[in-house]
Length: 66
Ligand SMILES: [Zn+2]
Image (cartoon, rainbow, N blue to C red):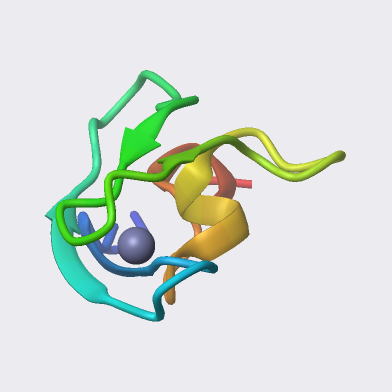
């Protein structure tokens, strides 16, 4: 059975706590994300593959596939 992939994640900015609902790319990892509110450029934390894994409420699609 194929697992349903959630493609939208709520990104929470670590500097201003602003929440943005973002659609995650299916098969690429997004390494950079600029906060729409404070314009801080987010980068993945050590050990995380993308900004969604570090700051999102839902892990990215490639992590959900594991
Ligand atoms: Zn921000």
